[in-house]
Length: 275
Image (cartoon, rainbow, N blue to C red; front, side, top):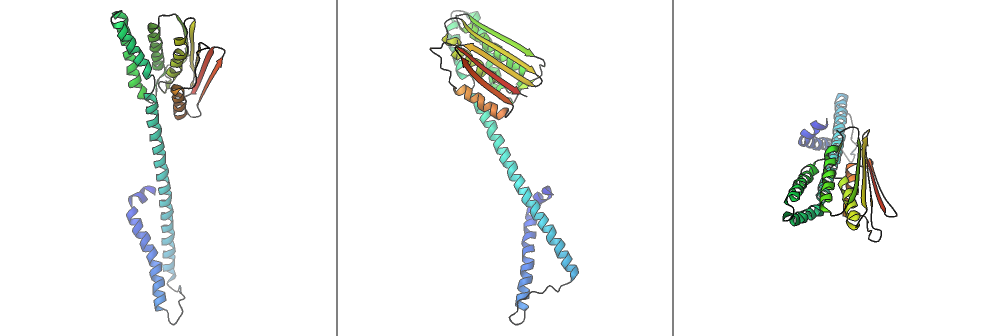
């Protein structure tokens, strides 16, 4: 019915106008043909005609109600579409802000390595190329395989190990029962980046990062813990964490939990996602 109304909107407008004019013309006729001062309108026409008119106006009212419902649904659909488009645009904007300064730092390191250790520089270039390809192309997808996201994290860690001239104790424990899990890309990297930025970079020695990722029964749990220099610690929610929280709200509303805690000189972040 809604489809028929949509295809015949102009005809319905004409029918509506004519239907309004019919009783008005009838009233005008009765007024002008009434004798004396009486303008009482009698309904002494054929009963069959009366039934026809009742059926006609009942059908007309049904069509009007149907069109009104169609108009409401069309506007609701339009509002939902606009909200979805806005959310997608916001997501793309948030994804584009992931990790930009990391790549700039690595390029600076490559510049310094190029004349000193060509072999190491080549290795860095290959890993950096893989990471940039993933960020640019796979990062635009709605979801990626969890295994692909893990490869990205491992490349990130490997690049940092090559970058620093100090010992870093990094433990990465993985417990995944199904390799076919899919997840929104570039979520965990923000937490890992913070662990390096606020922990490893400020510690001269004994820096550590412990990562645990498990996926069971469509639930992904990611936990990362690092130590930091208490005197230099400044791990307030920066743009990275704000972007992460907003992305989680858009992609996994009511299906995620992010908790961050600091105890003495240990920083801990836990992200749980229900797929």
